[in-house]
Image (cartoon, rainbow, N blue to C red; front, side, top):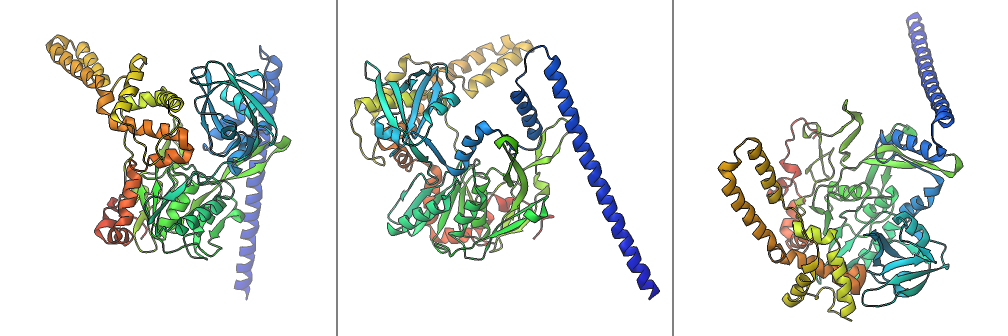
Length: 570
C-alpha cells in the first residue's frame, strides 16, 4: 500500500514539476516577445525622430513585417487593408470590372485579352487595342496596378476608354458597363474524340468543385467514356475545393487529406462526404512542374487510390496549408499553419523552410531521405518532392527564335494585324496557316529587331575568351571563325528551321482573336505532346490498366519506381 502511495506521490510531483516547467518556459517566451516588440517600437520612434529625411510610417513598418515573414516561407504574408480586395479576388475569383487583361508594353497600355461574354468583349474592346485614357485619365505614366484600379469598380457603373486600334486612323471611345466578374475555374471542357472528354482546371476558388462536376456531367452527356483532366500550371487555392473535386471520383467515406501543425486542435482529416460522381470512368490527369498545392492534393489523391494515370511532369512540391488570421485595422495575416498528408501518408512538400544553411539558403529534401509509401493497390510512391507522374512527358524547350518572337510580342502584334484584315477564319480546330501565310509573317519581321544570342554563340564566345586568356587564340582562330560563320548561317535560317513550332504558336494566337480563350485551347490539341500522350494511354486499355497495377513492366517504368526503396517505409 505504501509503495502504491509513494508511486502516486512521485507521479503527482512529476506532473507538478512538468506544469511548473511549462509555465516557466511559456513565461520566458512571452517575455522575449514583449522585450523584442518594445525594442522594435523604441527603435522606430528614434528613426522617425532623427532620420535625415521624412519617413512614411506605414511603408517602413510593412517593409519590416514583409522581411520578417519572408524569413519563414514564401506563403506567410501580411495583407494590409488596401490589398484586402485583391486578396478576396484571389480566393473567390470574383471582382467588379470589365473582364479583360491589360498590360503595359513599351510604355503603351495594351489589351492582351477580352474574355468572351464579359463586358469588355460585349462592348467591342479587342486584343491589341491601345488604351489612351480611362474616364479621362491619361494612362501613359500609370503602372499596371494603377490601371487595374481604374478599370475595376462597382457592378453597373460605367467606364469610358479612349483607344487606338490597328487599321483605324482616329481614336475611338468605348463605353463599358462594369459587371461582377467571376473567373472560371474550368475555362474549357469539350470532346477530343467521340469517346474522350477533356477539361481544364485553372484554379481552386469558390465553387471549383461544382464547376468540375458540371463539366464532367456535360462531357458524359456528350458521350465521354474516358476523361483527360488537365491541371497543368494550376497554382492551387482553397483546400475544401480540392477535397470536393477529389470526392467526385472516389467513394464516400474515403480519406482525402490530413493536416498536421503546431496547434493540435486544428489538425483534421478531410473525408469524402458526398456520393461520388463516377468511380469507374478511366481518367488521365495531366500535371506540370507548376501544378501546386491543391492541384497536388487532387492529383496525389487520385494516384494514391489508383484512380487515375498521371501524365506529364513532377508537380511543384508545396505541401503547406495556410489560414488567414484577422489583425487590427482591417488587415490580415496569411500564415502557414500545417503540412498536409494525402491518403498514402506522404507529404509532398519539397523545400525545408524550417532549416536553413548558415548563409540563409534553403535545401530540398534529398532523395536519400525520401520515404517510400504505397498506393491502395501497392504501387510505390515517395514523399518530399511533389507528385511524380506515371508517364513522364518532359515539357519541350522552345527555340531561341520562338522565345524572342513571344517576348517582343511580334506574334501577338501580327495576330492583331491578321484579325483586322480577315473578317472570318475556319473553326478553331481546323484553322491552319498556309505556307504563303507564313511567308507573309516572315516578310512582316524584316524590319523588326529579332536579334538574340543562341546557346552555341554564347559557348563560342566563352571558348574564344578562354583561348585568348591562355594565349592560344592564334592557333585556333581559323577554326573558331569557321564555327562562328556556320552558327550565323544556321541562325539566319531559324525562321525556316523552326517553322512548324513558330507557326503553331502563331495559329493559336490568331485563333484566340476569333474564338477567344476556348478557341486558343482547341487550336493546341493537335500539337500538345501531353494531350497526345494522354489520348494514347486512354486508347490503350491494357496499358492503362497495367500502369495502375504494381509489378507490371509499365508500373516499373514509372519515374518513382526507378528510385531505390532502401530504408523506406513499406
